[in-house]
Length: 175
Image 1 (cartoon, rainbow, N blue to C red):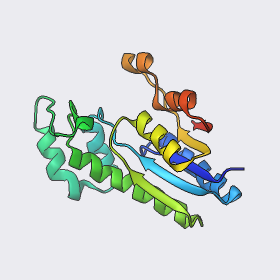
Image 2 (cartoon, one colour):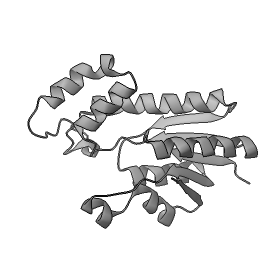
Image 3 (cartoon, helix red, strand yellow):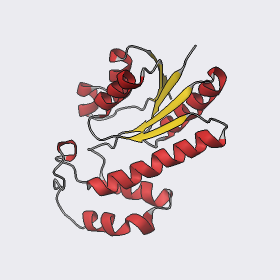
């Protein structure tokens, strides 16, 4: 039924559950699994620091997070348009992103999948996911759905909602 499954991940609990389902479905249908992470420009420094601590990345990232945490204002630290107006440096986002996709790929391979492609792309998450769907002829997207509790999320909608409405393939949102 499915030949290529895409599992976008941000390292959240919902994304982890989606990865489990994507691995299971890929095994069932002998499908290729594409894992995609697109760093979020709006992540806050404290949340990224907590993630780094939980994942044991602090020794690699502590200098960067300490430097950013010591700033009492948000600064744009990148020239790349995707990171404009971010309080997090691109280096920190990329390091954490690589950790997320490496862990997800390792988990898929540990569960017996052989055809796994893990990617890290920069840009708007919904746009990059839709581009990946088109470019790779994805026929199923399995992604986490998380509640949005801020006003911006209410007006702009979640990434999973945008994908479900705009993707030309089957979409499964996991809670």
